[in-house]
Image 1 (cartoon, rainbow, N blue to C red):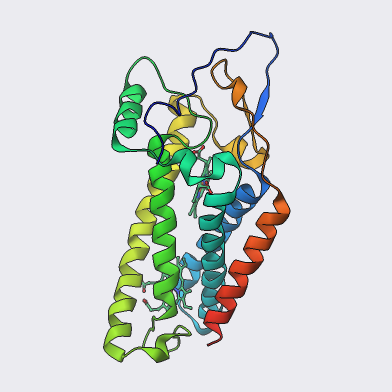
Image 2 (spheres, rainbow, N blue to C red):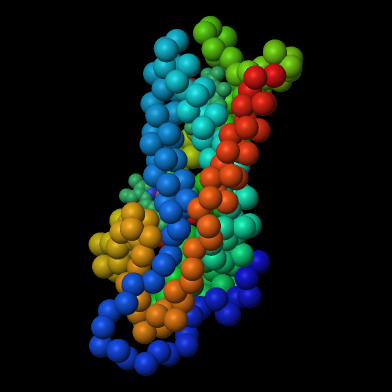
Length: 238
Ligand code: HEM
Ligand code: HEM
């Protein structure tokens, strides 16, 4: 976990008169994010429609989400600086200080996820992990069951299916908060967080201009993703 104050970038830089762009989200993190958006949309749609063909797609997209989340958990340890959990998981004091700064006059500027956003990222990842793993043991009593449902009793898979259904609602709430936050920054603070998630770069402020750091190598991310995919494939073909 980060030191509460050290992560707020405060070093002043010489004014150059030119705007500079600093690296924030590396290509693997951006690819992870936008793939997740597509796949979660697909999973929610197919899970709610529930037909035979839809549930086949539902399972495939759920496996892909599981592989993506496993990838992200590893990338949170070895990825580029801004993608690392150590960069954005802060203690309660930092979160409170950040919330105070949001309503106060002096807004704390963070290059990557802010302390509040960092916890919402963790919550989304945990909820997605729970959703995808419970799906493996779920069943709908008519058409579909997960690849591991056969290993648990009917009662256990019923309970797990109920968790799968309940956690889907938790996920909706987390996504709604996420989208409201992104929109809130845009409309209320005039800060576009979406562009860096598309291009990888953010315009530097005097406080953040020294925070441009190199990305980790993308081939390492590709290797991690392949390993995560391999693990999921191995599990679901048991
Ligand atoms: C299914 C819907 C979505 C899910 C599950 C989701 C999930 C996430 C996750 C897990 C992160 C953290 C990225 C990382 O560090 O790896 C993130 C960040 C982000 N997402 Fe989403 N997202 C969704 C939809 C969207 C949409 C539709 C937009 C834009 C309109 C968006 C904009 C962003 C932005 C701007 C960030 C970076 C926030 C920051 O600067 O701290 N997300 N999202
Ligand atoms: C993160 C990925 C996933 C999401 C977002 C998701 C979402 C959903 C949703 C919204 C439903 C409908 C719940 C309802 O009836 O109200 C559902 C049902 C279902 N899902 Fe998933 N799911 C995911 C992963 C999986 C996986 C990996 C499997 C199995 C391989 C799976 C198997 C099922 C089954 C069997 C049902 C019907 C039983 C039930 O209603 O609980 N899901 N899912």
